[in-house]
Length: 338
Image (cartoon, rainbow, N blue to C red; front, side):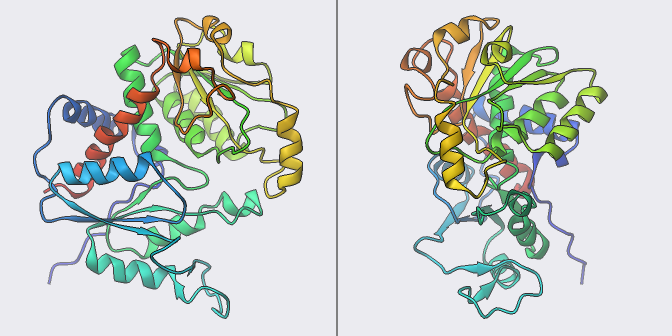
């Protein structure tokens, strides 16, 4: 009997080689121009959500269906129980089943597992390990696709790269500004981390503008600095919105947690209240180089970004969201296509 090859997973985009990312982007563009063949005929993708979703769930279901496959959608809120993810644990708590057992069984039913885990939310140093998604990948016998963990959001970053290529052409030498925005419901910095590394790998100059205390993960920033040196480009962090946006070709608005106050909602709310002026408006956009606006959504209008900018001619947010469909078709085609 032939030995079964280990499945290929997509946990973070930077774990792929540059040419693999380029191949995915090229295929995404081709699939957007014309419908793909039914390369997933007879294949089933299991979608496991431990947190809510709108774009990710809908776009992945649509992508699978349009390629001739099927999805099984499971939500932790209604369809199954808590799962234990710690290795070697004595399971005398609330979770009646271990991830390693669930992964082995579900691998018998589906051809791929797409998972959005839920962080514990108490400690950044613990949550940043992404232990749960890594546990699924370790024990699944089918490809595991990360639908946004604490540290990484590869599907969003791939769609973001596609959108910037459509708008700007060759990305080498272009300037991308990540600008933190005020929101009572900040996200994990996963989308920013993923695009940060991906953009630098494509030769973009990157600036990160955020108030003091909202610095990105230190290890990710060290990776970014090393990549910038390797790709003869640059990365700059600043606490000034105008400095971050000045000369940018793309302003990427995003609210993310203060990692200093992670796990302490009282301190986190107090810090956010002191940064409520961080909103993207036309004046800020005008300081860029015909800057385009991007945002991973959901976006709080007139709190994170003004209506004028969101509904204006340089807003790419709908195109960006649409490209989730096409880029995820590319991921599914390469992982599962016959």
